[in-house]
Length: 192
Picture 1: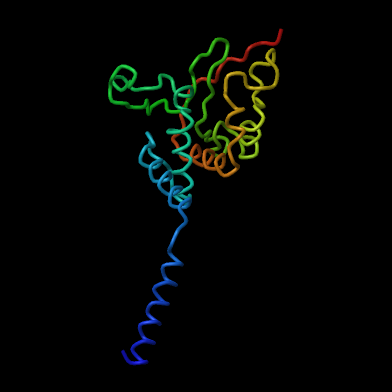
Picture 2 (picture 1 turned 90 degrees about the vertical axis):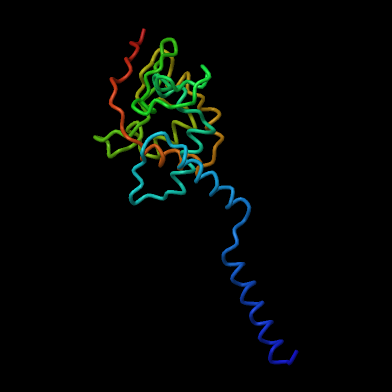
């Protein structure tokens, strides 16, 4: 091989290696994208993605629907007629009431997590800072059960408090993209 041909082969090899380095993703980034894609596929309702980051929304959907099980408590009933996997049926989430709250747990009723149109489409009417505070501390901004104190009593916020800010941002952004569900607000329990 002539020196000229050898230099050409080396130059092409260097270019290929450089190009591969620019497009290569870390295993963590690939795994993150796989979860985001799965989240977009599994969302049981249409998502309003215009102008939003689909990877972040998809990851939020993955956390809400595959990891967190938010639907189990925040949708009433959880499954559509004929779609209850606990009865051996193919799972079909109740899209009409998806994350609209209304499940009773003794004196408590799960909250509507869907965007509130009159509050700038914020999930449950909360800003991200309020959402973050609730997920980290359990503070009940609506104070619906003052006799129990200022903290949510059924919501497993101590587990969600361990999530990263990125995880919680993804959940919040996902909740901003789902359709709003109009339900009557849960009744407040009077203070003793």
